[in-house]
Length: 156
Image (cartoon, rainbow, N blue to C red):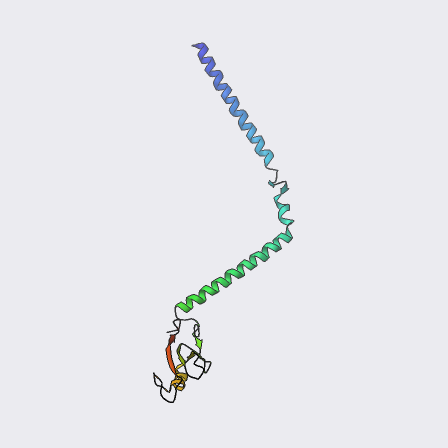
């Protein structure tokens, strides 16, 4: 029994010596590391930042172009949102009359001269082309109705 107790005391003493040695080794290692600057791939962090002036200018130019693209994208989205909500450009989607060249929201497709070419005319010009009669009359022999076009994006 005495032999067993001395063996257990020796084991405890060995464990304490091991723990004390480990703690001392760690404390020595920490004190050595305090004076060392962190390194990345052989160069110190402070020198790698200060040496790259040209790279910083290139990064700034790229960042500026990215910011400009982002601002243009936001402006385009705001314009589309305004158009969708009815507060955008009132002339968006309008087409030009073939007779008077005025931009309007509604055009009538018709023929009105001897060329018999289809033309898109506004309401005012339609009265001149057809005489104000849907099927035309004898004084407008080349008039022929061909349909109606409306601007679906017109502001209400």
